[in-house]
Image (cartoon, rainbow, N blue to C red):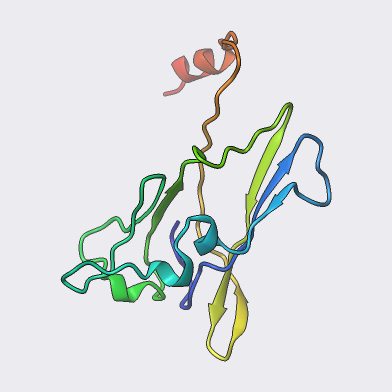
Length: 144
């Protein structure tokens, strides 16, 4: 995630729409930082006093040399966050859509709609193997 505006970026809801959910999701989180298990601005400090955060199934990484931990709320910062659903599986039968709201916090106790650069990837397990169609592979062969 790349933050484009000043202010805290971790307030957006994570929603899991499962098996036909339309208007209301099966799972609705309380904020980006909460979903990635880093409530209160990932305030884990090492013995030397520096902010660092990671755990067994989730983490916050700050790519790029010179990314100071105390600059979380400055524009242009980049963050890599992940969470593995090992202990808290998200079981679905036929379809799953996960959304993340770009919402932050600004001075004066006001929410801040954001226009950050957010990308994601999802992995899941199947009960049995499935043949992969070759159409996408053919398309890649013809790219220049």
